[in-house]
Length: 118
Ligand code: 5GP
Image (cartoon, rainbow, N blue to C red; front, side):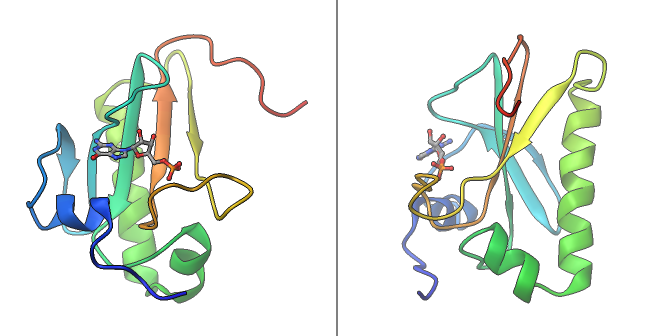
């Protein structure tokens, strides 16, 4: 599968579609999810063209990987999520119902998120 430059997050990165920006640096853009599943629901996306966690982890240069995860950490810190806790997740492919084919992490927080894995 090749990267589709017309996916919705690519359009957000190009500024063709607006977003409610939370944070941005050279490696990542973070914005509020349009359909939040928790009081805090932020999406963090890399600036490069990567389809999924799998694609990003296996093909991105180390500098981009490091920069991206530092940005995730910065978002969590700026939003003071560490105190009460938060969840980071990524849907990859069909079984996980990945909807947007540009790699993104969901950051969920602001309430008891329940147990996902026992
Ligand atoms: P996925 O299922 O791919 O992991 O999640 C995609 C997420 O993107 C969903 O939570 C959905 O609500 C969010 N989303 C889809 N389109 C838009 C959009 O145009 N703007 C924003 N901010 N979020 C979007």
